[in-house]
Length: 367
Image 1 (tube, rainbow, N blue to C red):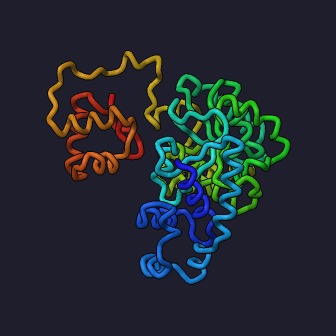
Image 2: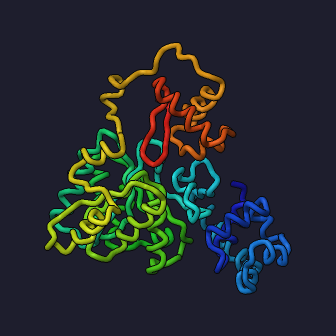
Image 3: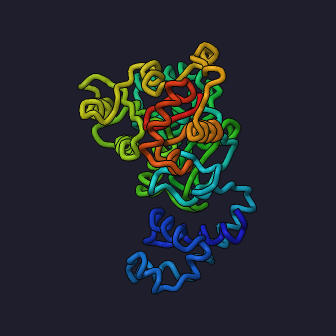
């Protein structure tokens, strides 16, 4: 992204009372973040129905002044920025209506190395939860998953450490800016995580770890992942909020059951009881539910028929999936400019011919 474009995106991100959903609408209507700030106030009010205060905030010159300072920090510290339309922006998060318009990235993150799963839970992790978390990640190693969590006490840091132990990439999603460390005691893990993963945040350099920031952080954790796993949780807690968000995004949610008398199993048991999460007793449950195929068995999997004859539209869909990887059926339809009912029929034909396979969450991929 060009320096000037980034400046205006930062300024739009900083406007109080707008939010990510409205920011995306403004950018879509005006063509760019820069154009938003050059649009007539009356047009903004008429088109979006924004109140006087929101419009006043939008045209407050302090936004650009603060954005210039943040841009300088980004450039001096080589912070990578991910705009919500960028290719490198987390793919699944693109499909979340309230996903951040801009994310900051530190470390050695590569989101294309394997499936992405989030592991969250109580900060008061028990020995049962710790043992389960460590064994789960060790048993998933051959699938090379990217482990996402919130870098907090308890389950979060346990998941990060287990990922590093098993040489898996791990990503900490922060509820504050990069100039802050929370909790302070976890500063010792930053360097190691940078080497095989890194950190993402939507917050500016000096933003503090406020309560509302943790709630915002949770939507990134849930939104960028194929599935969210709750290891342990009391009856109330941030991990249950993350589970609710994941469910609202139509993502798979798993919870580890425990004894009814265990305080930090009550939240998980309730999720399972209310059909808000699938029961997770081992790595096998996750692998089967998500339809993961072991790299060791790839060569043994059903191969595509040789010299299969495809219609023009079947070839169009197959080529799109072969180039773009896993994709939602709605986006396949949109990008290939075919009606959804025709896309569904064509994908079924391709599945029968051994060319594509369906995945959970209305996803398809080429074989």
